[in-house]
Amino acid sequence: MRDSDKPFVLYRRGPWNFTIMPRGTAGWVQFAVPTAVFAIYAETVEGRPEFWGALGLYLVATLVWSITMIRWMRARSELVDVEQLLRLKRENERKRGR
Image 1 (cartoon, rainbow, N blue to C red):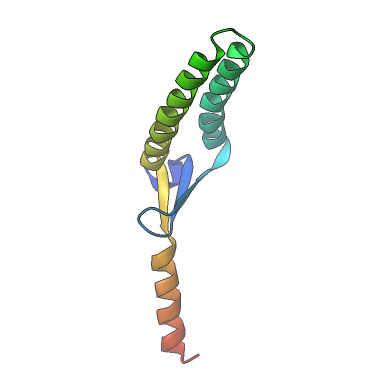
Image 2 (cartoon, rainbow, N blue to C red):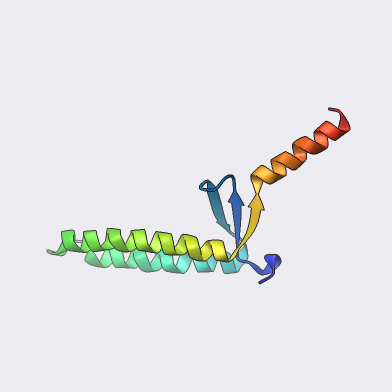
């Protein structure tokens, strides 16, 4: 998949510090659909007697969903390494003598 076709942009500021942003309509749709599914699920279990069991299941499902979505979005993201861009900027400023 070419970088221009990818529905997400990943800004990396280190190995564990990153931000994933949807890009264009395709990115927002791919982000919103799973989020809407979990919101509907949360509404359906509210007020039931087995609420606490459903809440625990929901929290585990949310954790699994979060990890899965991060991995899925990273695979479909254009990578922007902010640290590398800052190094290049500093190197160019040194060359210009600023």
